Image 1 (tube, rainbow, N blue to C red):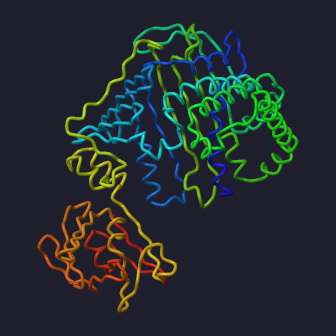
Image 2 (image 1 turned 180 degrees about the vertical axis):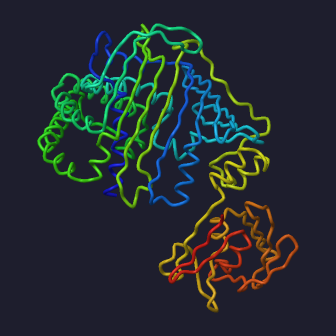
Image 3 (image 1 turned 120 degrees about the horizontal axis):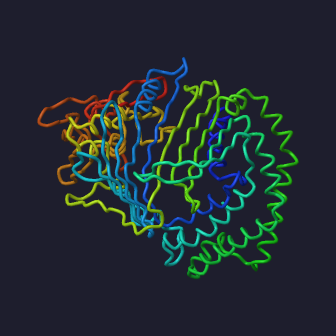
Length: 504
């Protein structure tokens, strides 16, 4: 964990710089950034590419992952954001000279993704009971978003206002083509290294700590957001979600919260130099926050201070340790925006053959693969590159330590057939009348029948003798792990205290 923490910190680089800086030339970056947060509808296009650089210690599998990622590019040819929050995308994933087209549509209920060649589109619901349980009363996700807009805008404005400028910042006037239209734009260019980023943190914290009016305004908006949510609660919900309710006036809340903010920032600033000196001595810190970590950012604003084009190139140097098989990664993205706040209608995806719900218990690797022809590029990508069929299960031989129901009989390790079937995505049915178990292989579709108190397994008409019979102990039906795992396409290896079940 000590080494991994430095891998994540550089991502703050992109967030802080995208948050804006102080005014440069005739461009008020603060206003431009806040202005973009107020956009309700927009059309755009975007490309995204990721590059990983393996170290000499990288395994063959880790090198293969780098090869796959380095050869891929996500292209969104046309995105539409409707003012009601609906979004549609059309694009493709470029890989090995092929393009895998896709469409996506998202509304408040869920996300539908249509992949080229799929029999049914994938569906990801966004309003399941578990996901909506935290919303009080009749409050909807749209209402939460509407109420949060002002809070987000105030937060962004406060941070944008105090973000200091890197040394390499330029602004000039250019003419660029955006979606086939020649547009006069103001070009903001920023370059920043990890080393310089560290030098900007303390001035930012110092500056933002002095903005009492800004903090009080933000905290007052936060109070309004919380009290609005509270107003939608029933009495029972208020009792259950007491952590969300307030028993203070707005002025009391703002005063107390501002004092807490000031105390926190004072403590951070008083210890900052000493802490920085301590962590700067760590090799991991020096690598990540060195000159090899760098950000190049180009933003193009129109006369209304809307960002019409963006080019972001972020490279993060990674520490040399056993936890990081890569020496650096790079993210490059470009996008164009048009028809800002225009009359835009997102494009839904038709589902004449139904959907494949990814949250359903029937959604398995095999179910996903069966949605495609075996010769299709998506099938090959999922099966050969993403390897979605791979499984690894570790089973402790000692029942007192095992996370599964296991027993040892006649020196054979047995496991709950239901648990083993679930781990290998096999469909499991039990017929109490015949005392027979039916297992359907998720990948091949082969059907196996097992009988209680028998060591015979019948798979698609062919009989195999297992190492132990099927037994029922205290209401749990057990089967020999090795025999049944192999029937379901897995291999089993034995270690000193546990066995490993692997499916490729």
